[in-house]
Length: 243
Ligand SMILES: [Zn+2]
Image (tube, rainbow, N blue to C red; front, side, top):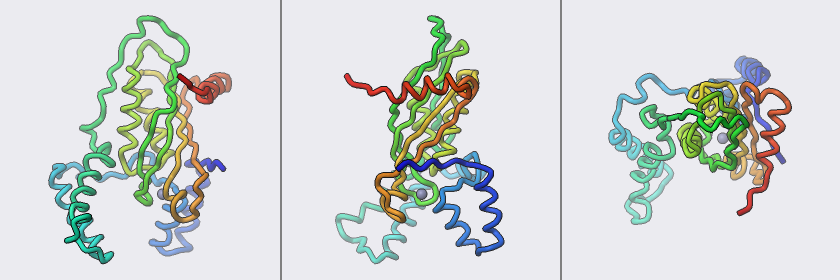
């Protein structure tokens, strides 16, 4: 089964209807469980980077300790006594490292000297992200394409841009749009597209526990809005790559 989730006006109407019907906590649960994003940018406060990483790790370590303590875990046990520090480091340096603009990859581009005029598709980019509603993994593939308007970008830079925006508490729709917007800026063209097909462990491993379902999101800019170009891109994604 494939679930296709879109940020659409009807979702926003749904939110508004629910405001008057249910209390705030229930409303927040409803938004999270339905994976509705409230914003096209990550909801990050202005003071998000006032603290250095090592201070954040220290604070989060205490918070994780507190969670495990409350759950009744014995934090003197050799197996878990390092867990709070490991989790704190993992959150700040790895899983959510892409929140920090200073970690943004430099999207250096080059002149399209060989005048390649067709689309370039980089498919099956491995994607690890984290659902911002449950803090559980999103695991999938991103497929990205662009048509050069004079600039080209190193292939691994596309992977790095995908990874940078994935390393945040995320919703898949926003992630898809952010990848396209970043490449549109770097390449100075609207002709960029991205499709993401991903499994959300909050759907696969808990709640409805549907291990088969995955979520497909897409963003088509410029020429990719035209049916023929879009169809060509989608056909390349389906190519089975064997070496
Ligand atoms: Zn979730």
